[in-house]
Amino acid sequence: MQDKNIFEFVIYVIHACADKWNKLPSEVYKLLDSKDCINNFLVSNYDILHTQSTANIVEDLKEYLKVRGVSV
Image 1 (cartoon, rainbow, N blue to C red):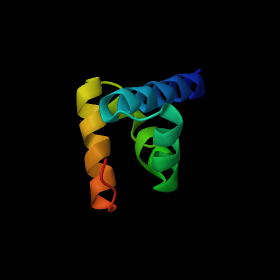
Image 2 (spheres, rainbow, N blue to C red):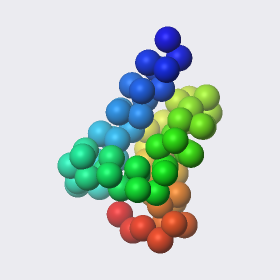
Image 3 (tube, helix red, strand yellow):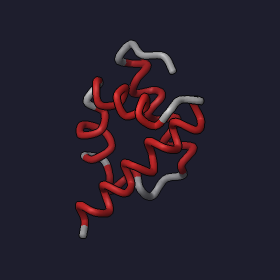
Image 4 (cartoon, rainbow, N blue to C red):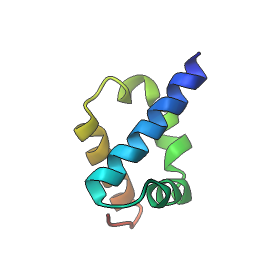
């Protein structure tokens, strides 16, 4: 059950970022995947992140990518 919840959370966050950044979900997925953000940030921090607001998570991801040289 936990894996399903994490999977649904990751999909939700990808769509939230796509909406905020005016990108297609597939573009956001490729961007996050290229920086290993999905496994090293979203999945590994699921227990903490899923309790935060969507806006905070999207901003955290933006900062994560910025540190890695990606501007969204």
